[in-house]
Amino acid sequence: MNFIIKWIDTFGSYLMLMKRVIGRPECWKMFGRQFLRDIFQLGVNSIPIVLIISFFIGAVICIQMKLNIESPWMPKIVVGYATREIMLLEFSSSIMCLILAGKVGSNITSEIGTMRVTQQIDALEIMGVNSANFLILPKISALVTFIPILVIFSIISGIGGSYAICYATQIMTPEDLTCGLQYCFIPWYIGCSIIKAIFFAFIIASVASFFGYRVEGGSIEVGKASTNAVVSCSVLILFADIVLTQLLMQ
Image (cartoon, rainbow, N blue to C red; front, side, top):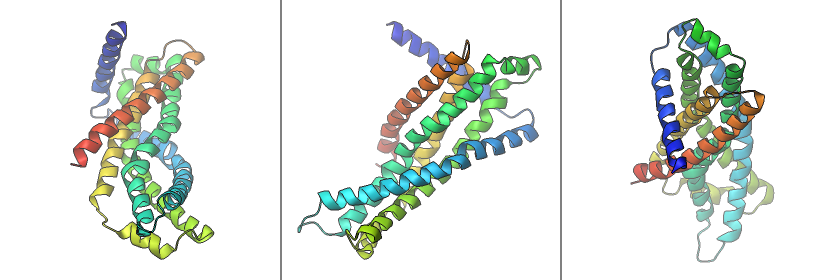
């Protein structure tokens, strides 16, 4: 019972904070500067890890599909087809956002939490600045804008990894892989991945900011808030993945 009450109280606090966040920026020049900074810090800096992980995951999926479904009754194009579907429908959107929740989410919580414990947020409030809007809205806007781009990079890198493993190990010909990748391709699946990524980006930015904004105490509490933010973002992303998949794939 206490857990339910605590959860309702936390959810209510989150909605109240989002009410302060969502609104017209008080200074568009400062918003633009913060937006560009967050685009680079949270988005551009995440490109290397997205490319590396997606490349190797694409290669591993290709190997696993080849080794586990190899059969005279199974056409060779199934490997490319399965690799494409896994990358498009789940990995590049859902699993990649789970990874980014750990990297980006902890970054956001630590940054805002440190500002809270060092009383920088209190100083903004004293000056009459809507600190929630000033600090959190640029981060939400930056992630919602850039994570779909990371999803595209992830898809391309994963497919590139599958081609690389074909050339390096000769487990199958690149021509067979290409036929599988092109077989029954549905462009809407790319749209589904991007739509899901936009929702996941909002979850990561808003939930991580919420935990950082509510930090009380010292540096130890900032670390705890970062852990709680990553766990909460991961759970919410998985739950949202179920709902969005059901809605978008009907």
